Amino acid sequence: MCRNIRTLHNFEPAATSDEVHAAALQYVRKIAGTTKPSQANAEAFDAAVEEIAHITQHLLDALVTTAPPKNREVEAEKRRARYAARA
Image 1 (cartoon, rainbow, N blue to C red):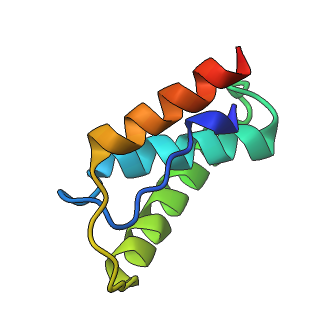
Image 2: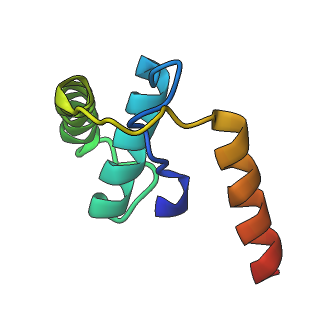
């Protein structure tokens, strides 16, 4: 489940709100232990995703670095290479 959470800091262009939301969703799924909440828990689940996405965006906006921005394609290739090595 958590393998889908990617580093979002220090990319050019910056992480999109969709990427931030996807990371928050994966985090809440991991913590809740389910990919789809029951109807009784849906409201709490959805609220947690929104709050975590909001806080994550604030964190990304506040972080500073002197390192050069990462290239999304290069990072994706590294992930594919790691995956191939495990197989």
